[in-house]
Length: 255
Length: 145
Image 1: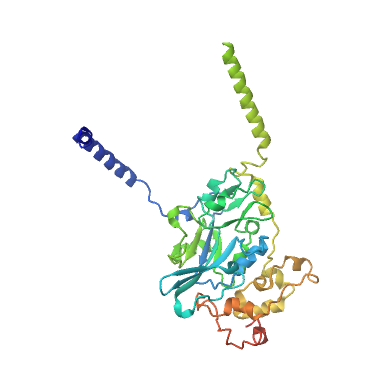
Image 2: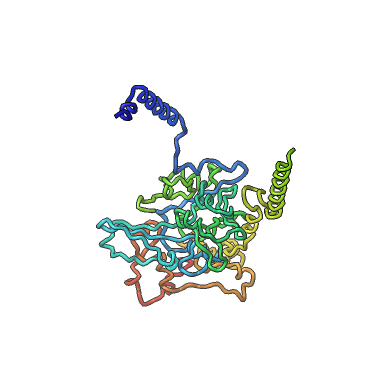
């Protein structure tokens, strides 16, 4: 009884009300957070700040991006190692969802659900989001993976100890364990091409130019225009990863 | 200073100097050059070889085909998207031949009917019915379909 009496005392009530009101006032003055556009804010003051844009309305699911990526970066040919791949999402009329990616889309897609059962279906090309607050970089125990000044997430092959912690940490499933090198491997946004002024191999070879990359610092770049003019969305914005991969016309079902 | 404190101080100095020595020996040379990572690893990745050489490399020899392609529906396509990476072929055009895909399955990757394929983005045919016994390239020139 005495405990309850003290907790309901006038003194405690005033103190708690004061703390609550103060917290509300202070937090309301903090800048608001925009998960989608956050990463597009100018970061690198010395050079480019790379971002990627994928237009789902243009993707025809041919798998050329996944195929060229494997060749350009000597990714093992087995069908479960990918730096870049395509998924087909199919929403059936009964509301159930089917996601498939046979061999990452390299051999093309056969419509596996009968047309009369389909409510909606579309392709979603996936690759590293090159997050500006990468969870994979934060968990590496030896500092072997890092974000460059240009905002590209890379792995130092010589320092990776192959603990695979980053594979678990990546919410987008964009890393794999290289079976021969015994280190973790991932999309480098074709760093070796970008540094020479070329586009990444997947983007150069995309037949419909559904994917582009470029400098987010430059308001005239194609990526910046893409973000300004389309309804862009990033994957899993609630995770606050600072993803720099912007999708046009992304369905909410996509995870 | 009492003896036990002197010993403690000496032990501390030994441990700290050992740590500094080890740190100096184990830290890679280019560490911290750009950030909290080995700067040379970035240069190593940047120096990797390029496999897809780009359409500009094709024009110098295959100018008639490239100009034919530029007038047709396939004008936006990269040569290597169908023919494969050209880095070996550019180095030794006689010995290293590129692939010439002509199967129905290859054309189907883009042109077979699939509801997920946006209608505007690409021409689609029901390939099970559309002259199913013949190769597509018999009627359609892939460079000017």
